[in-house]
Image (cartoon, rainbow, N blue to C red; front, side):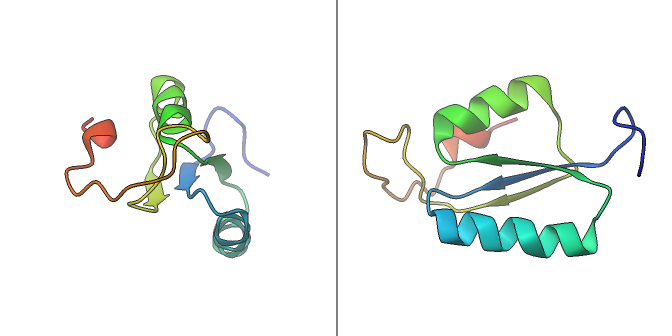
Length: 82
């Protein structure tokens, strides 16, 4: 297993647990040494990006700002403007 300091960082974003779990499982098979993080809301994406610059982001384009607000499609992806 790779050193945690040099492990490839991946971020998977989806508010549906089944999709999130399936995507993570598929990525783990292809990238067994990667550090795979998950987020279910835009707030969680922002918090994760504040600490990590992932090499790959797999993202649902219709996620809620937080779990109390239903998701709405946002074509401009304002929360991923980095």
